[in-house]
Amino acid sequence: MIMKNYFRAFKRTAALIGIPAVITLLSSCVKDNTNYVAPPAALVSVFQGSTALPALDVYFNGNQVNWSPVNYGSGLAYVRAYTGLRTFNFYTYGEKGLQFSDTATLKANNVYSIFLSGTAAKTDFILLKDTINQPATNMANVRFVDLSPDAPAVDLVLSGTTSASNISYKGYSTFVPISGDKVYTIQVLQHGTSTVLATLSNVTFNSNLVYTVMLTGLASGSAANNNLLTINYVTNAYF
Image (cartoon, rainbow, N blue to C red; front, side, top):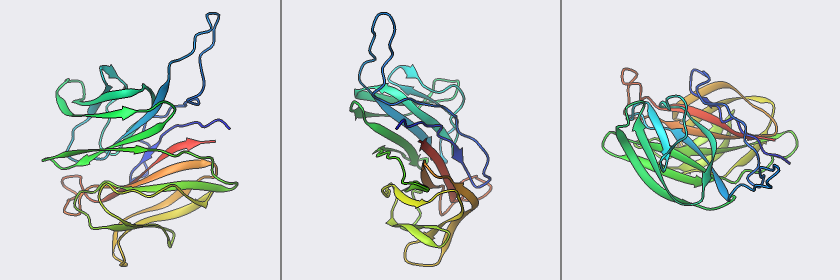
């Protein structure tokens, strides 16, 4: 079954802010009269979850992979990337002023997600290996990633059902199955309590799609600084 991706990012306003794209399987190759076969590659997506960073340009080694600014709460669909030790550079959009840089080793035929988070004092680079499997019939798969540096441990609750529990900063859950083609209210609660830290209503998770839900922002944030705790989600893949 072919996995496709259009990595869409939504915030509390449910406004489309991601970059749509479609990818082919990692195992695919380009065939022409010269029988060219693409070199081994990984797939890498990026989500900008740091309220402290400006609009960004994203480079894998010396190769720019974005076409428009990567703002807080938005990201890039899976990009085909060479394997081995890679340097990921994040520059101020359009200015080439380096904001942050880190390295990671990519393995062939693996799928990864990069999440940026942190504070003005320290940017954090979180690399996850994604296990993207086709959901069961009439189901969707959802995971949760905590990108809030100062929030307490949290639980993810989807329309009254806890889908991830006791997740701390930079922590994450596995992809779990939920009923597809259903409208959900997403809540992030302080772990083990009924205290709601953030809510996103009227979210439809469709069958045969794979999603990541994220908590971003600061527990100490303010509306004036645009850094309140916020629920975001992205569509990783559809089948």
